[in-house]
Image (tube, rainbow, N blue to C red; front, side, top):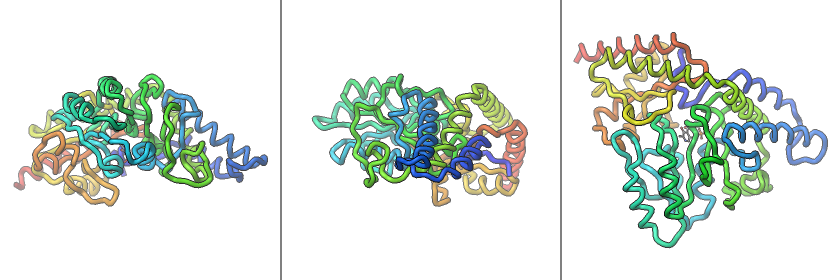
Length: 367
Ligand code: PLP
């Protein structure tokens, strides 16, 4: 099958697969002091160094987790229940469902309404506030203006967490330069294994562990670390760091697809096209034709894409992100997401273009 669903998960990079297999042969527990334990510790700390390098920070700030859903939950709950959480309306469910909080609206382009954000921050009163913002949206690729958002957070003394899951490996990232408090990333979105991620924690913050036990990860996440997963994560980070041309190559493919689609399909909507976007995803809607139907048709044609809002249970609902951007139901319910990555070729994009246009044109004739 032609795979164009990298934002759901990316195929594992060969280097990452190799690193996982090698690390599985290491018998020890990284917390054990004997030789085997120290060998496992070395694998883990090498991986931590690679993750830190990708994120532009020091290894000591990297907390390994079981993926970004866990990282987001730890970020939002780690300061205790008294912190007032503020998010945007276009966040991933792992943020929206984790805690109750104020939701800053986004505009038609998918960008946060900075005026509304400032009002919410200003109304916050005495207590501590934590702002949690998705840097690159998983459905549209829209990039939020982090510097401006961070300035507002700082002005009002709020902590800031960035969900950088769809940014890692897709945009240059520097946790230290961004001067934020917390950042979540996940290995499987850029060619590492599933079920391992990290929360990057600014050392000025003391986080309470969500998972308590043996005090691993400096007391911030208990449980024996997933050594093989971390090794694959580290290898994927290295591959991204070393292949500087990959991102440009992918965005050229995405742009080629969008140009050809808009030339051929007059009523096509590209969500977020007016905003700065990451180059690996396009969210397209053919109004009135259900997203689920489109995804099934593409699957029958041998191509994997997803509905804009594909959720973990496999159900397709109207995209909450497009609804938040103010699109009417016939657009939000017809949005599909085509996402590219390290192994995508021009032939994959062109096959999707042909299959998609043929399907949409047939639907239009039949209706
Ligand atoms: N945040 C964003 C923006 C995502 O796209 C995802 C993945 O679906 C997550 C968080 C959750 O990541 P994970 O699958 O590692 O739990």
